[in-house]
Image 1 (cartoon, rainbow, N blue to C red):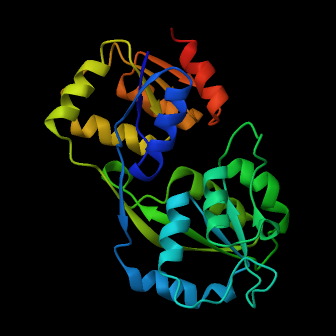
Image 2 (tube, rainbow, N blue to C red; image 1 turned 120 degrees about the vertical axis):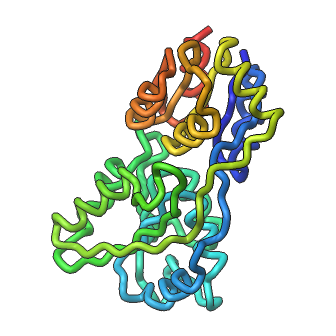
Length: 264
């Protein structure tokens, strides 16, 4: 069975390799292009003000990597040795791993358990929400979206920010990277046309990837297309786009494999 993996370029290779090892014909088709922050000075300023925040929430591994790329000083952060006692919040294991690669210490990171049923803002709040008190300051490090997502903080980030504010906290945002709709080559258009109708399974971990796909291939019908998605919100976007079959899965390899196999 062919599986179309739509994650950004930084992440897609790992998932293609893992799914290929599980016996699938996994094909990379990144549907979100990631580039540097549109305003790098805003990121540098956020670093300079990091000591004024109680926590920094990173929405993705890309947010971690692009934020740390513009780190202005060698001083450690998110460690016991750091002069700044700001904590790091992340929603999933990819972002958690990115922080560890940036030399943060696990004891200063709040994240859902690796075996959690879902990796999202709701799961993060269940772990870190008790820290938020009146006056608690959170910096949300995010990307700027493309297409319909442009200018949108993102549903999950909005949800988390609303809960921080409802508990008396304060939320600020900084854009650390840019997400764009990738250029669709003729080869990729041919792949899309085939995979929409030949029984391939589309793997989506982002609503934005679906929106980009639909925008790039506006005349394509999805009435025979099948998808496995990693969140209920993504599932709704896939159904709204016209995908005939949509299965929800936990965002872990074993669960994804089982969901894909259920479509054979």
